[in-house]
Amino acid sequence: MTGGVFDIIDYHVHPDFSIDAEAHSIEAYCRRAVEIGLRGICFTPHFEADPERRSRDGVVRLRGRLHPMDDPVWLEEYFREIETVRRRYGNRLMIGAGLEVGYEYGQEELFARVLETYPFDYVIGSVHCLEHVAISSSEESGRYFRDKTPEQVAADYFRKLAALVDSGLFDSVGHLDLYRRHGWRYLGRAMDTLHEGWVEPILARMADRGLGLEINSSSIRLGHAECIPGLDLSRLARDHGVRYFTVGSDAHRLSDLASGLDKALAQLAKLKLGVATFLRREVVALDKPRIPNLK
Image (cartoon, rainbow, N blue to C red):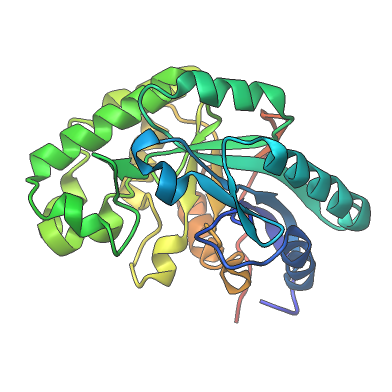
């Protein structure tokens, strides 16, 4: 991607605070973003709050050591680092302070307290776990999918997604049909139509709340033909009134940054949808997608 302007903001980037990411700093990502010509980058470290997964997910990486996620010391350091790179790179790069929250029933008060305390620019709400199993994980997901029917998966996932949307806590829904990432190994093509009859009222509620939808390109790196969500589900979102869309690589290493975003942008362009820019959790711009030439 070097040698040309990649005029977009990557709205889903995991720096070293996320324990499932490689230990690359916020500054290292900013340097890389400038090198490849990104217009902006929004950092989205994980915030997970499932009490039953505390020992596995309830930590961050802080100065090279594991640190409890519910101790706000790490968030203070996160925002200090954001301010440092804004001073250093702010004239060349828009730098957003975001968060990806793994939604969990009963944790709304905790989420609200964190989101009200810190000056985030953009907050993704994602469903990562069902029945306390990470369906986003290639290692874990089989423990959930192996004994489920498509109907059971749909009920579990979309009821939780509906609660996420109804909480009113988030700016955007992350990787809307994440269950497809690993679920296809166990349930095959049923994953392609799992949303039917479930997602439509959720999309309508998203539209009513002004909630955005992320087009996540991580699936392209995993060999899938489409982003998450793909063209048909994105069209359905548009037709149900969802107005704000972002694109995110879901980078967990430097080489992931902006990976697949050309496909995400092409998808939005095909649907004649704009790309939203968020600042302090408000949409401040809606731009026509500019698809880079990566040849």
